[in-house]
Every structure is written in structure tokens, then in C-alpha cells.
Length: 125
Image 1 (tube, rainbow, N blue to C red):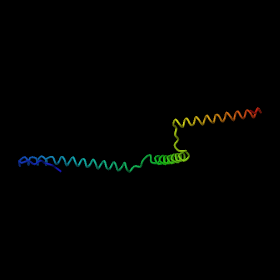
Image 2: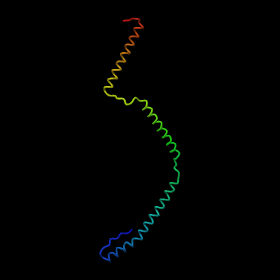
Image 3: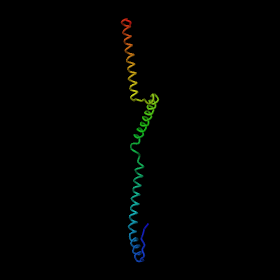
Image 4: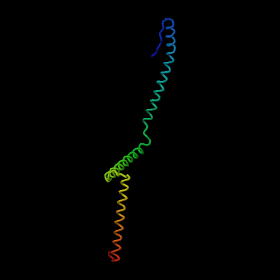
């Protein structure tokens, strides 16, 4: 497609047309060489596509291994989720509660140890 600005003067319009027509051979030559270059590029791309992927077997085995590991991780995550008690809160009051329970356990152990000593020695209060 060629564009020409047409003016009011007939003589100038003829000169413009002659200028466009003179350059048309060069434009045709440029476009033909671009088309030829594209044909060469297409032929090279088809050759590249025709060659097999060099690491296809490695890709296949590693993809299978990735799928296997993903499945194992998902199963492990589901098992952990099923076996967990749910979300555990660890705030100040929970820590205080744990300390209180630990103190009760210590008192209970101390009493059991004292009772065990009394039984061994045979002395009663």
C-alpha cells in the first residue's frame, strides 16, 4: 500500500506519483528479501522442532519422582492434621495454667516420695 498526499497542483501530483513509482522497485525487492528470510527461519524452526528433546527421559523420571514426593508430603500433612488436637493457643494465661499444673505435679510427686519413705522406714504419723 502506498500513500501519496495529493495537492491542488496537477504538476506536483504527477511528480509525487513518479517519486513513489520510482521507489516501488526497491520496496518490492526489500519485501521479497524479508519474505525469503522468513522462509529460511521457518525451515530452521521446523528442523529444531523435529529433533527430539535430549533430556526427555530424565525429565520424565524426575517429574514422576516429584509427583511421588508431592503425594507423600500431602499424605503426611493430612495425617498430622488428623492427629493434631487443633490449634494450640500459647498466651500468658495458658503459660500460667501450665505452670500451675506443673506445680501440682511436683507436689504430687513429693507426696508420693514422702509416702514411699514412710512405708520403707515403717514410721507413721
